[in-house]
Length: 220
Image (cartoon, rainbow, N blue to C red; front, side, top):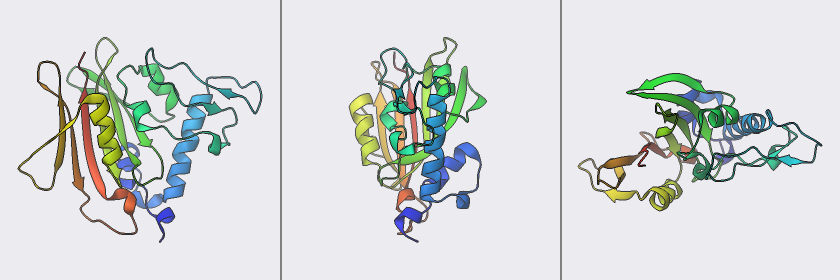
């Protein structure tokens, strides 16, 4: 089985959907998630012509959302969401609902309400897939973001977290875990990223070499 036929991030996506790993190949999973992303971002905006490109407003101060071709079948015109576009604390419940056709709700955590979605960022080795959850507080603000899944190369994710949220490497007593953490202005823990090698690493499944567990809390 070649790289393009390898199981792509099956562990991460199954966390969000509950579907068996073996049902998905790399191109099938990527195409399915991409088509869903296209449909979700175009459903609420009427198309003027088949060639126009439309966008939906992003939360205030947020990175611009992905432009969606008005033809849902034109997958080439619609990239899958990037990690830097979804790790955002200015998201709203409406924003989450509009951009994913499948959202698991009713996920209470302490005083928070969770909304979980499946995420696949692409088919490159440093892309990732997993279960992304936004936890909203009583003020309808994102208080916590969690992301669990797999990747073939975690360095891009680590770089993004270091640049945007000041994650730094921490030493642990567990040699199987690579740990990164960040703190708030009071020097209290505000986020952690745990990376470990998959229990079984297969040369024909490079996309699932590493498992990760990310938690980021609101610091404002």
